[in-house]
Length: 292
Image 1 (tube, one colour):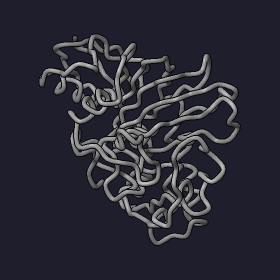
Image 2 (cartoon, helix red, strand yellow):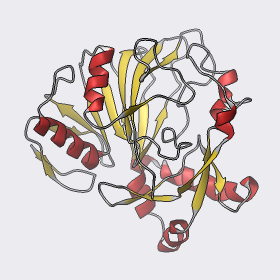
Image 3 (cartoon, rainbow, N blue to C red):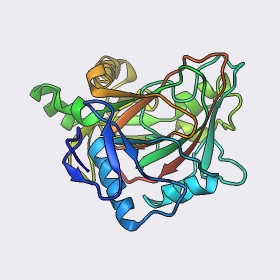
Image 4 (cartoon, rainbow, N blue to C red):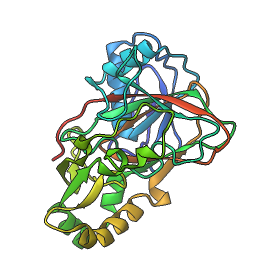
């Protein structure tokens, strides 16, 4: 099926169909069973669909942890989280869990890209829904290509020369948010979270060549050679701009749903609107490369 995509090109997919869910990004893939070993051409087309649509979704999947790992490995090496322990049997898989009696902040409840505190942030993540609430718990995604491209030429010129400082101190430092939240997840605070990493504010995607904003609300704390106070007005503007409704899609989860997003070109936000209900997801993260 050939589709007009919000990504960088039109693509003919050979073994499945794709249905976009918004004008900005996101599409559901129909006709692929992720529990099975996929043909090389199907993997190639799924990678193309990811680049075209930035986040792709699959419905009614039934995956064992090993099957989720096997699917994810077809797109790159997998990595373990620095501060959230994986399961005992499968350290590559982290449980993202909020029990019905938890009232604090959920995991991922701010606009962010994953693990940008690392020198080489993730290529992407594969998230599998084990248990979802009867309502709420949707995930939002925002297209960072469009966020950059809709800025004024003067703003783009200024941002092209800026470097941002990223750190995991906020969520995972010795006094981080994890001390009062995520009590049913296996999270470890660490001095390692105080380390700082530099990334360009505007990232060039290594596969598409497109430029996109590369800052986020979890890990980006300031601009290089500026104080946090000096950086905050511009950071706030960029984060608000980058998550404008016109740049987003919204995914309603069901048990067995899978989301696979390109961490190099999107931010995402897990809504925390299901207090009193349980939500459990399994996440596998694919290693990426150094932003440039």
